[in-house]
Amino acid sequence: MTTFPSTRPAMAVLAALAVTIGALESIPFPALPLLQRELGLDPAQAGLLSTTLIVTSAITMPIVAKIADDRGGRRTLMVLTWCIVVGAVLSAFATTFPAILFGQFLQGLGGGVLPVAFVLVRQLFRDSTPVAVGVLTGLFTVGSGLGVLVAGPLADAFSRQWMFLLPAIVVAAVAVVAPLALPGPRVVRRTRLDWAGAVLLALALATLMLAVFLAPQGLAAAAVLLVLAAAAGAGWVVVERRAAHPLVDLGVLRSARTASLTAGALGASYSATYFLVPQLLTGLGATATEISLLLFPAVLAAVVVGPLSGVFVRRAGTRTALVTGLVVTGLGTLLLAGWHDEPWQLATGVLVTLGLGVGTASTATYTAVIGSVAEQDTGVAAATCGIARAIGAALGVQIAAALLTAGTGFGLGFVLAAVVVLLPLALQRKNRSAGTTARV
Image 1 (cartoon, rainbow, N blue to C red):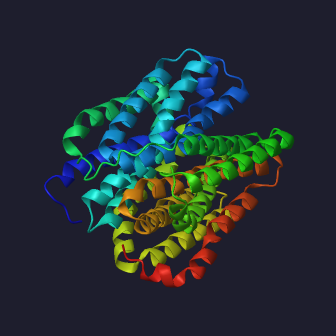
Image 2 (image 1 turned 30 degrees about the horizontal axis):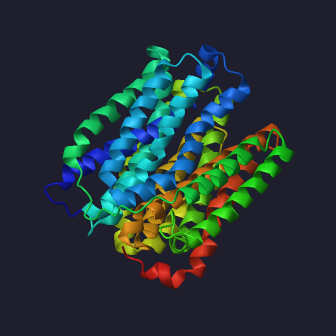
């Protein structure tokens, strides 16, 4: 990677944030039963708590990314880091449901860290953007795995407070160093934020995500929310076409369309796998600690695959890398569909799927969307992929849970996950000429 004197500390800051944000996103899941007991939550409240962070990320990501594009990544990142710290501390010491819910909302703002980091990466590493993107996406995946790995042991050995406080300490330390390590913006565009577009987009995304989460409880309510989401989305398009400074330029949205659909398919596939594998391991008699240890090789693989996939993208092109990542992910998921009778078989399948395939495909996806837009639209373009990933992840978990509830078995869930992640290959064939020449 081509580096300059100021890039090493900057990359260290961004890498630490990527790991920590990934961990914060996954920490509540293994500790949800403990949180239910200590706070007296009913199943509906527990479900809302587990999804608040993801929903918040999807809603606020495009707004945060637009601010970063216009006013600079460093300042935006500083605000986000302190919001995350406050949210983590509030979640740690909350004694009521509304308090921990608000803490998770503040932590959910951290979902905007990755697109904001890409704004800074493009500014810092012009000659090696794919490698830097690969490092950050890989480390985000590592953080997600570490969150699952350490949440249970931290809660058991110390208390639930340390699940939130340890990442908060890391983010606070990064926030102190960040002003010295990160570069300021080359150009500051103090355009007026498109608040009408922001409100309509937030409403459309919020109702869409709620429809996804409420669908298993009642199709009628989900259908009403989907209609509201469609109406808000249509209103948003009308506003953006007329806005002098739109929140999301519709041309950027068109450029990011293929990458966003791919990110959504990836999110749906790997979230379903992430949901199904621990359920299978529990049925095979594995303890929480054993489950963490079995998933850990995939985390280690992601550490290596992140930067290597960036090099692969740079040398082979985004299309080749993306097709490779999608195929490996699909093959790994099909491996799980027919080969899940022993814990080591599940660990192997997860290693291929999440450790190798998803990391390569994610790096290629983000690199493709960043390279398809002008530098001043980097954050918003990356945010569209982030939103699609969040929506896909929500759908993947809900569909996997519905299949288990219906008693259709794990094999069908893995097969569907494989089919979903292979669907974007059709889009790559349609864009073959553009993808083959894309060497960012």
